[in-house]
Length: 82
Image (cartoon, rainbow, N blue to C red; front, side, top):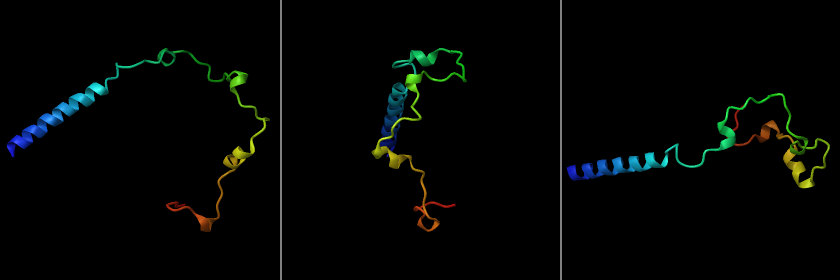
């Protein structure tokens, strides 16, 4: 019984060491654009080619996804409580 507990303790210790090594925050790639403290203007808009066209055509297959979600009170989804 004592051998089993000792083996379990050694396995837990080794597993923790392996997990700590994998969770090392210094390993890997650090994003350069997020690291600097840039003073950003919160009122500045994105460039026009990054903004969606509010008057653009919406494909028919996307129209269903843009409709608001509505249902009758008797047809409430399972687990929904108001």
